[in-house]
Image 1 (cartoon, helix red, strand yellow):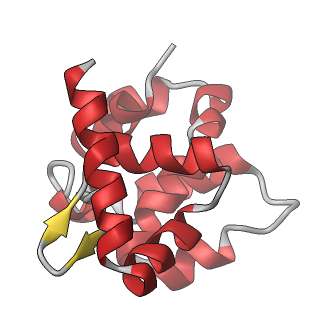
Image 2 (cartoon, one colour; image 1 turned 180 degrees about the horizontal axis):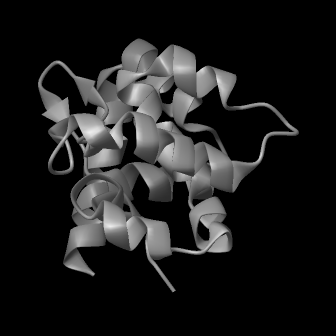
Image 3 (cartoon, rainbow, N blue to C red; image 1 turned 180 degrees about the vertical axis):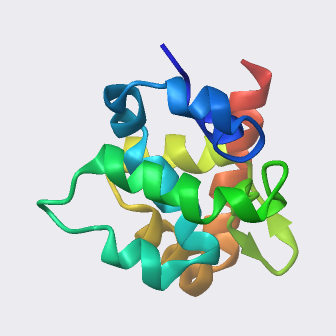
Length: 137
């Protein structure tokens, strides 16, 4: 069974191995491959999001059309994602603290960020106490 990044590496650097992959293995990774391709080719990837399209043939299309342009996996395939921290005037909190507070108060993250923004110092003080409590346990 081929994993996602094995298939992606085969698409660009090992076309002979890619051709040996079954159509079922190609189709399993259609969603993520199409998503990665949408970083550089958004219009083409959008056309591939049709309900009745054959997913394994789409992956084959990407390999035949884009795979030949690169000798190795392009760097844009690996997009870096940064997690945001709620910040108010230089004060930041850990993700676990914010998640804990939202879960206990049964509020959304947006409501919490609005509370930090509009309530200000009392909210920041409460979150600092919770963060301190979490770190000590």
